[in-house]
Amino acid sequence: MEFKLGFTPYQYLPVFAKVAIERLDGNSDLRTANVLDSLLDAYASTYGLECDNHTRESAHHICARRFCESFTK
Image: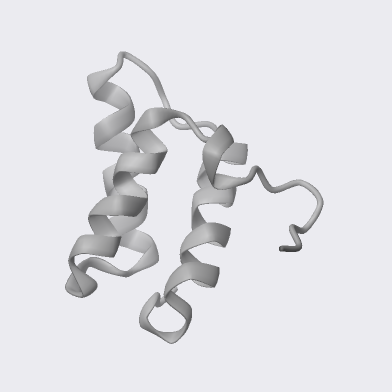
């Protein structure tokens, strides 16, 4: 498995980011960049956090690799 530099592997993401990715995994209708961003923001706020750029970019990279063509930008 190869990772681009600057992207965090899935297991190192915060819980809220993992939950957002798994939500997209469970419902293919949600697999857009806008929905992912909304979920990252909403789930991070439940922990009293904000989603940082590195986590957001990593989640987008993971979704693009995991869902291929079904993940739209």
